[in-house]
Length: 176
Image (cartoon, one colour):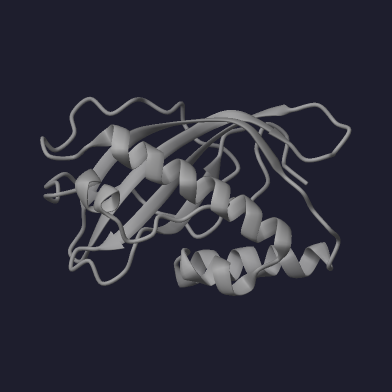
């Protein structure tokens, strides 16, 4: 069940270690990092496209990775696959998703991602991690016979600077 104007809380798809993942980010940015959250916020300010990204950051490649993460999260959430969810979320995000799954009480869920668009909003490096904020918008269908509904969210993806883990979802902000 999605909040008004937003997709379901948990979504799916994580990048696996690949040349594409490495190509998306070859050098960290020196920009400040956005605040990350471990649960959706009630509202998100109007997202603005990134005005400047690090020269060696391939936004198109990263947007593809981000779409895979989105779709994978949808599938893992629908299936209630805690092992998969844990693999590509931060501990705080995993706890929020796990609580939502418990509240769902084993009720089957099926989310069809009809259309997904992604745009990198911000790229930053904190002391020990890289942070990329991505705006997702498009159409999802949550009921087999239902119509597709629009959604608009900003996700914060993080990865250790040392590359010891792949991209993980640190926060999802649903636009009101």
